[in-house]
Image (cartoon, rainbow, N blue to C red):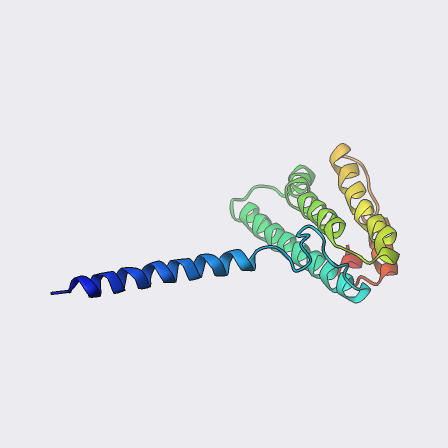
Length: 161
């Protein structure tokens, strides 16, 4: 049987543990300078690394989805005609390019890189918009401008589109 002293001691320990956890959580929130919205700009090398990671991730995911969909169409003996290809591009490639544009636009680039990185992000967004706006258009290289700007910025993965 537990004595009244043991019950109080056990209850006090639980309350202290809960208070300690609450204090830990509260002191872990926010930033050291009191302004939780301000973040330090990345270096050029960090921007390149993060941007290429975004492009590689989206490119890999889109390729995987396209491959799966093509296999699915082939196994169901549905023709992979231009209409089916267009649907795949609109359903898979365009969202991937839009994610790239958004991801690049959200990177906290150093001041000297902001305009150039914005130009890359905008070129990807423009390519996606152009294709969505005129899906039947005959595009030689819809991502050419974006890829060229990405390469000039030093982005390897993003220049592969």
